[in-house]
Amino acid sequence: LAAGTAPQNASQAPDGTHRFSTTATGGAGSGGDLSVAGSVAVSVIVLRTVASLASGASAVLSGAAPDLTIGASSAAVTTTRALLADEGVGTPTTGIGAAFALASVDHDTIAELGAAVTGAGAVAITAQATDDTSAVAQGSARGADVAVAAFTAVTLARVTTTARTAAALAASGALTISAVQDARATAEARAATGTTAGTAVGLGLAVTVAEGRYLTTAE
Image (cartoon, rainbow, N blue to C red; front, side):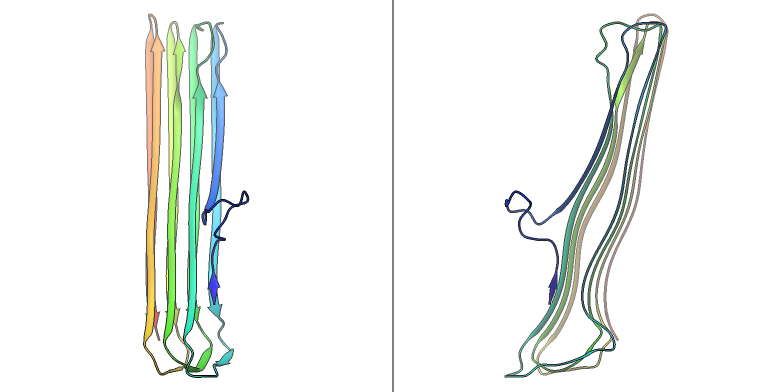
């Protein structure tokens, strides 16, 4: 019994990964007294992969003690970018730029045996997850007298990988319960300002909050 991503993507190329990408790009104007530009990019991803013989059911395996394998696998890459392009030909008196990028990911991978099983040989319950979540806010602002740039990137990632059994199990072979997880979360903010004669203020704030759990239980 297996649950997971397909071994190929929509183009039939080898790729067993969920890929989510969000990009917002803003651009400042050309010259004038005041130039204001901003971009906001938000990704909210909820991903759940489950391979399960549900509680309340029962399974009787016939033959020469066949092995039972329950496996769940999931891989995800989430990229969120808020960009500010400074492509104007003139320089405004006052230039203000801001960008905000938020990546929020809730990623669960579960392999479980809840049903009563008899007649099995070896039993393996495995869960494996890979997650890479990133948020980037980047750009610049320029003005002849005043330039202000504020850029914020926030990554919130919760990744849980669980392999468990709480069932009555009659097996003649070994019982293996395994949960493997590889998770990465990053946030990056880059702010740049430029002015010919006045005040320039640049602020970059990057915040990452990550929770990773991998659990194996037998009850």
